Image (cartoon, rainbow, N blue to C red; front, top):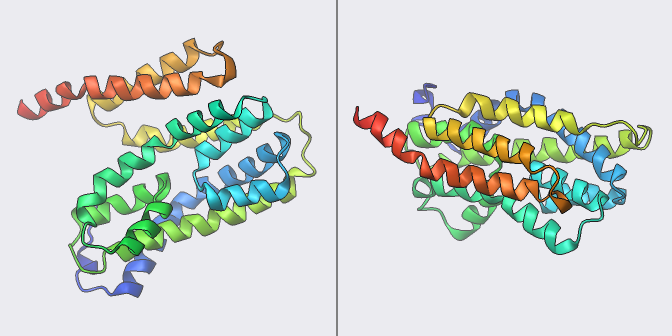
Length: 241
């Protein structure tokens, strides 16, 4: 566990820079992810401006990739919207886990931090928010992680769009997205319920590959969440023991 004692008397600027520094190592995975999304967006038939704009409007890496894949496969719009919504449900879980720590903030701050709260920003900030000193400016740490990630994602997407113009459409780059998320997922699997949820989701994803409109994504996500909730009793039993 990190030692956050040096932030006990930190002001806004110090918290922001500490958050940016905590986010920096994770950008090694964000940059290639953003580049690949820019390329995939063009290969799916989206105009360059739409690919870049999506990184600002949606700002959800995996859901953007899913959108591009479904768009390229000419999947009906309602299915695309529903699938992207299911993929983004994880953001609601992130928000719920830290809501009680940021409950005193005003609406503007909550809206801003909710927009910036994505996978890597949450991973970099949750330790500071939950285990660090409960100072009045601790939300600036999350602001630092989120803004740093946002800026990097915009530049990486733009770079992917520029590079994508010269990359053959036959190159399959989807595998790099899976590798990125595996690298994020595996270190966080500590409880039995988390391991069970991941195993069930992976099994359903493989078994449902033949389902039309790439709905295996939705099925795997729902199966994983249901399995994780059902297996939580094993975590409670381990704690009691």
